[in-house]
Image (cartoon, rainbow, N blue to C red; front, side, top):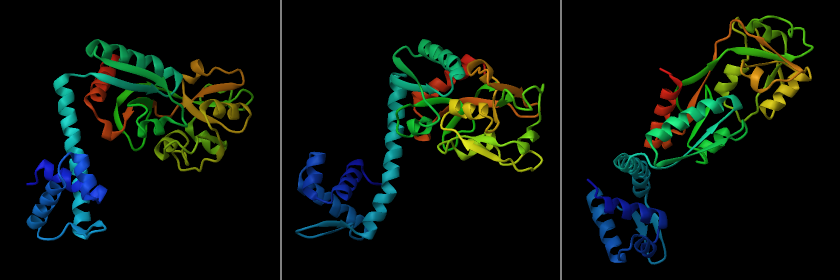
Length: 295
């Protein structure tokens, strides 16, 4: 079993490829670095580094060991951080965001309950757009996002909000006066498309390539934002399946919303980066579930 110091010295030397800089980073002597590496090499039975008076390089064995150890060390550090969070309780700062105006009230209820349960954790609330929602999770600008499912490549909590689907059409469109329509009408009209940054799973759910019966759905123009997509609808460039709350939050005299009688409801919930599953995030998901009465 490798000791923590042995792992730290080996990985630091594998990164620095210099005994002196490794010693400086770890606040130990160069002799101690050399001693630990030689001990590891004897245990393994082969050289980990090729070294001479001018350079230090990893051997194939050394590269393999480094590649195997890096994720293990990261997992250990995550486990220790989670344990420390648990021992201190939920503190620090949590950055949460919403995508779509009508989701904000639900998010604020979750923030209120979370604040009651964890008064020592500050919650920062912000809005993101279609263009930067995923990037904000990936780069760590936000910790948790209330968004529409499916949200590919992220950890997801339970569905917190549900709404019927309706079809956005231009006010003068032939379907505008219908009481309700079938999803099958998508095969008869171009469908406005979401921007490229949205995930493949989300696009399949919102703007499918085929109707339930297998008829191809013609693709309309791509919009850069939800408001821009509705403008394309108003211009008669295509139709767009949306949630029924669009009636309230995006009312427009040039757009009509027609119920889709046979469509599954849209579901929304919290998403976050799997590697960011901290105690703060888990407690916020729990608070949001309780605040909305979700199962």
